[in-house]
Length: 127
Image 1 (tube, one colour):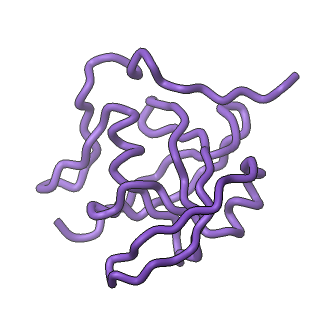
Image 2 (cartoon, rainbow, N blue to C red):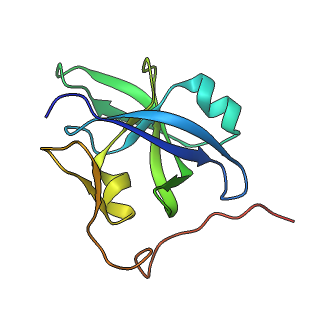
């Protein structure tokens, strides 16, 4: 399929979004962002965790949540905080928003005909 870049918005809440370009990782489950972007977004502290990379190495990460908006669809998704050269989007983010990447065109396609699944979490800023 080659490299697929996806432009979206990510932030702590739906009211605090910044535009970001993601490299779509067909082998990755969670969205991964570098610590500097986590700080810029002001994401809530996460849970220490470990993950396995494509080269089979195990690394320590922080697992938290962010609000994501892509092509008019939005919701909260799990995010790994890890030293990556650029933000990477995993399949759980697209599945949560009812989307997929077409392997031929590299374009995002809607899988669900409705805006978001009924159980979609929404993180809101405290007043």
